[in-house]
Image (tube, rainbow, N blue to C red; front, side):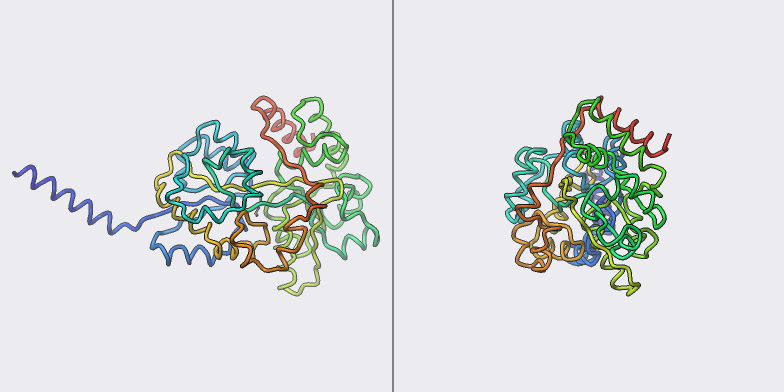
Length: 362
Ligand code: N2P
């Protein structure tokens, strides 16, 4: 009797404590990748406390994920990284019963992401985009003339151009699995090559322009472009549009544009997934389902100008964005886009070393 009474006393205390501590969901997403009003809206609608942290590199996310105990409930790796992480057992399968908005996803994009995560067992698309060139229209024209090759990788891989552009500042993404394929594609090699001899050829491309690269980084360039501190960045589509928007808002005279280079560019897919050791998998599903809501997904895209993997969202996305081929590529642009597969572990090690050498300029 006494024991039973005691136990239910403890259970009642635990229950009270549980009710006092609000439910929490921890999300780890790319920086500058959401309309922050959505985060508040999520908390208001669900009563769940949202802890929202950001990163700007797949490698950083991967290190946290693979060492375990990241503490996150939802993470957003790019599909190439996700594929390798699935193999490593980093995620738990999604429970579609907890994702009624899953039906909003876009088949065309899912067919592509299925190559990395068959049948979307572990992930859903958040957004997708391209890796291309952001530039300051006037500054580049001033330095290289009106016919500057702004829609060609020549702009950033031809040392003659880069030597001049160094004067107004150039940033490259610190994203080896995107920059190395871009360099290979530029010299006519298969950007998705896994052959060490082919990959090694990228080193020469970077060696020629390395002295003129001010910084390797994957988020600072947004502000730097917007403020006119740099004139060119190899960057991600929506990030460049964000720079364009911020410059226009500040009325600082910097006109920024984005080009998918004619030689081709990488298309990537960022996928929401739940770590195998997520503290709150149910809350994770609640968050993912919230993002999969057509209006919420549209709000996110209307803010960041990355294409959404959500088809039902399209009726709420600004027509200007939907019809803009640099965000939603038309057939002709699509033909010029390539995707990549994850490097096998051994090749990945070489790529990491190669990238460290390239960055250090040794
Ligand atoms: C947002 C960058 C997301 C695209 N700043 C990188 N996959």
